[in-house]
Image (cartoon, rainbow, N blue to C red; front, top):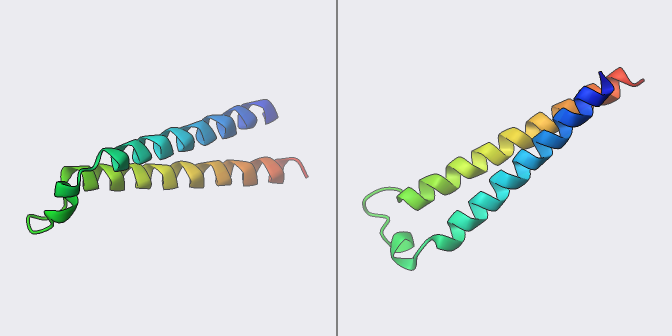
Length: 75
C-alpha cells in the first residue's frame, strides 16, 4: 500500500509540474495586444492560463491529500 501511495504522490507532483510549465509557456506566449484588448472579455490566452492554474491547484491539493493519507497510514 505504501508503494502505491508513493507512486501516486510522485504522479501528482509531476502533474503539478506539467501544469505549472504549461501555464508559464502560455503566459510567455501572450502578446501585448491580447493583454490590452480587455473590452471583448477575457482572451483565449487568459482563459488557458486560468485553466492551467486551476489544474495546478487541483494537482497540488491531490498531492497534499495523498501525503496526509500516507502519513496517517504510517503512524
